[in-house]
Length: 179
Image (cartoon, rainbow, N blue to C red; front, side, top):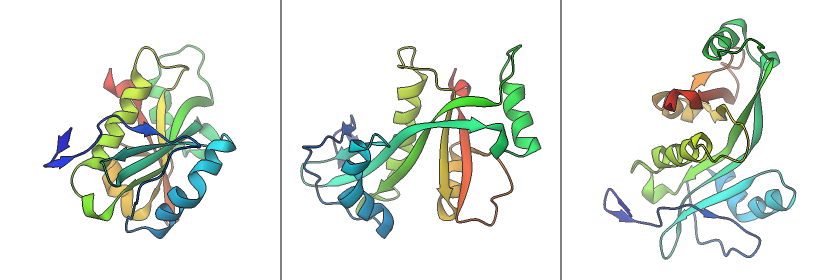
């Protein structure tokens, strides 16, 4: 597939223990180090699964997924009211199933070419299909402050205002919005 003239493997490749990780450099040292040093261990420990978007010579982008929940305890009154209102269920809960994007990184040379948007589209499609392996209503992310605008642009919302001055903001996307 080609995106803005860049050829790459459209379907993300699931990182396995024997996967040779191609070179990757983003502007974030923590994200670079995670892919190189921690991603396989997270897989081994069943904490997260990493997916790679590659071309023939390098990793263009990657993202990690793990199970999560949207929990009333971690939201403020306004955030929870909005979630509750969106779920027509006689038995309202205080916990809803979610998938967390634990890491999302695009190599510096490919930043600004739509790969982040593509990754969000891939995740939404994975968890909004009728064949999803388990129930999942939300996509969550602990967005770095410098990435908050990106997630807002793609319709993620804040779960709480309590983390406004923190390093990351807890955000969610309601998969039902796709229907």
